[in-house]
Image 1 (tube, one colour):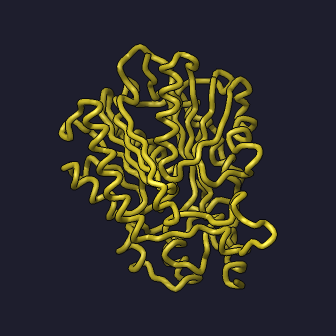
Image 2 (spheres, rainbow, N blue to C red):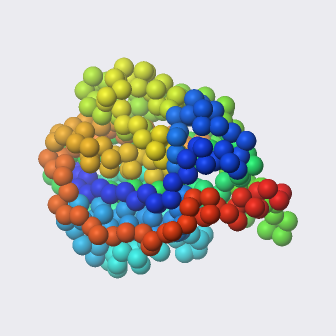
Length: 356
């Protein structure tokens, strides 16, 4: 038994925050951001994570030609849920009407989608589930400290989703490698978002993302290379056989380091960080969806997925694509309309950051 990806979809909020717009509220410039990260703009959501996830899910379901009630399970990879209890996956289930599906959230930071893909594949191979929705969705801008330039410029919001279905064909996730080095967990965290904190003495800045960029960069390059090498070996796929690399979109330099390590030319690497920034668990499924929309995935293509995130987690996978690379149908699902600009959406957060 194998687990084929039969549907895919994304949801990006309409409000765009460019580097030049960001420079009006933070001491930075377009050149400073672009030269260090490759990011030119990002999206800012006006709705919670579950609504982003739901639209991406509905589009993936349409692409698979599937009704939400046919789903056995929903796995939502996120570190920015609507609420701690109930899960964000439960909120998403309600929106899309997947009343027959079990649900759970999965938090592995930016590696979350690859973790979810691996878990879903194992569940299908075990024979207990036939149709699983895996989503990566984040509203990262909700947790940014807008006085901390090195962090604020990096992140954006969005969601991507895929449908996995049981099949006898040897396609889907052929091999995966999931790791975590918790000795460096302090390099990326939200300190006061849990029971280890004192909820009566919470500092605003401890409810925002704290990020050691240099340490993350060093470990991301090494971790993604090692995980990629591992899944190539496990799957028996050579570097030359990889048709397309779909990496986590954290920093253009990290992506370039991975492609050079693999010996893969730029035309075989999916890059959209310039448009969206780092959307954490959403980066890989969004990039995969855009690669399919652009015709870069062919029937039988071999894909390498790789990511790195909080924990510090790391993961990679080799995916053999099936026969179909076009959606069966299109969904008319959309987010609620938004007339506000990105800076208007962030107004309260900008004021709170400046006041502390």
